[in-house]
Length: 171
Ligand SMILES: [Zn+2]
Image (cartoon, rainbow, N blue to C red):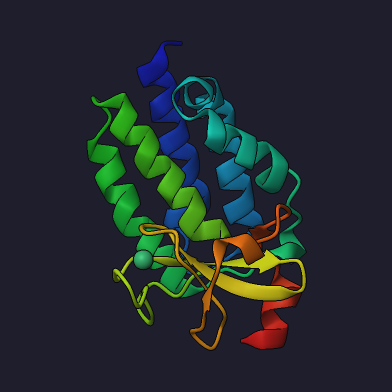
């Protein structure tokens, strides 16, 4: 199978497990991501090695009870997914959109409720040693939940996406 065959399969897995469902189902979301990843990982490894590392360290090992997915996150990812389906010709853009879909689904965010104070970019929730914080995808600024800016030197080297139990304590 060539790259376009793999892309087609990946789209099928995402559609079938995630975007054709009426209800949010974490088991299906995780399954759709992991199955689609099997078709795309060898291409992404070359184009986006950093994301591949992130995927292997954070997403491959994720358990269903560790993720918090909202309807808004599914809706935001679905918008990108629809664009992604039309983008099969340009593999690089397709993979960018695919990475965005994974991020939006698995790193907690509130797409229609909040955005970065500095640049209006998308905020994702991470865990910084002892606290849940928000990081802007566009300008990389980090914020405490009360909006206070965090200096980059106070960011842990173990920074990782926040998990469900950590989020539920503070949301
Ligand atoms: Zn920003």
